[in-house]
Structures are given as structure tokens and as C-alpha cells.
Image: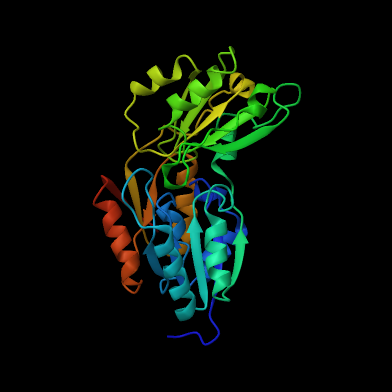
Length: 310
């Protein structure tokens, strides 16, 4: 199939991971998509809102590893827009916050392809919410700065800590690997031993939080084996007001495979996601082969329980 005037590309934020944090617009666009080009950090359950005919294309990039380059992703989006009417480029969190959305937007505009940005809940907001606080608090943290610890071509730029020194919250995306350098940068200009929380996999079933001080956090992180897991660092007085929210059920890392009527299974999967249980829905026999491939890839990596829907 070829689209004479080109399809439309939606740069969609999938949120931090929990499907219940997906926006209504994002869900609608996923359901309407002919093809979905998705990132590594997108919960595969979110992809299963798509129609059986939708094509899935993995364009995920893993920091500090060899991966698909941005220019290749741009080419895939352009090719998809020439072949399909509704193209969804699905990105973790909010695509406009350290999501290289400008590069993708410009590549599409240069080809006169219609494009729209659809925001999502960013991981910093989800990380704070799961600890029962906001990123700001009157008389505690009047402002927040979003920064990144990972720069293009691994350039070692400095993290903006001015807001932190003025009492605000510093949210550092992709900063775990460079945390030692960031701590040195802060301690070089301040004697305050700021509280810090590192939240891995915010809103997911395997969410893990480590809370400490700048002087202790590196030693604390060495005691857990979470290398390569996505993490966000929150620094500042707001961390002292954090508290774990009791979960409705103990978290279960066994992947639940739901079998049965899709819409009923999606509702059940959303409930299970809220109590920390990872879920996936078995594709029907008529689903596109790329959906079956993703399903098989995931269950090959997990111990699974099958739940048959009534």
C-alpha cells in the first residue's frame, strides 16, 4: 500500500510505564495506528491496545550500548508515512522531555510529512507520585529543574544545579551512570549534603527506590544489582518528605499471560498493573506477525502464568 500524499505521524508519549498513566489521546491513537514504531522503555502491554492489523517496529535505543541510530529511526518514520495513513512513533514518558522530539519533528517536516506531538506523563512526575510527594512544595521546594545525565555523542556536559542551590528540586534523567561526576559537581560548589532518591522503573511492577544523601548514595547503589535499568534521580529538600505508598498487593514478578476476549483482558491487565503484576495479552491467531514476534520474545525472557478469561 502507498499513501499518495503521505500519512500523518504522531510523536506520542507512552508515559512512564504503567498503562493506567497513558493519556486518552495516546490510547486512541494507538488503537487507530496502522504502524507503531516503539522505544525500548515502552511497556509492551501498551502496544496491545493496537488493532490486530497494526505493524510493530522496535526502534529502541539503549544508552551506552550499540543501537539503532537516530538517523535510521528518522528514515523508518519517513518510509512508514509514505506507506501508511496513521503512523505512531511511541516514546517513553513525554516525547518533548529529553526524547529527541525536535530531531524527529524536523526530519518529518523536511519531507513535508504532517506531524503532531502528543505529550505524556514524564518519569519525574511518576517517580515523585509513587513516593507520595510532588516535585514542588510550598515553603519546601518552590521550583523544579529537569536535567539529563546523558548527552548526545556522550559529551560530558555539566548538569544545571543552580535551581538546587536555590532550594528547588533537581530531577536528573539518565543520570545514574554519571552520578559520581554529578555529585562531585554539586559538592564542589556546596557543602550541603543534599538528600537524594534514585527511582528505577518508576510506576512499573519492578519499581525500586533508593533514598540517601549525596555522601552515601553511591555506596547504597553498589549493594543492588540494577545496572542498565532506567532510573531517575531526584535531589533536594523534597526527598525528605517522601514515603512509600502501601500497595494493594505484594508485587509479583511472574508475568501473567491473559487469554480471552481482548477488551476484557485489557481491563483486567490494567487492574493487575496497579498492584504491581506484569501482564501481556496473548495475540489472536489473526494478529500481525510482528505482534506474535514481540509476544514470543517477551515470554521467552520471563517465567509465565496463563490466566484464561471467562
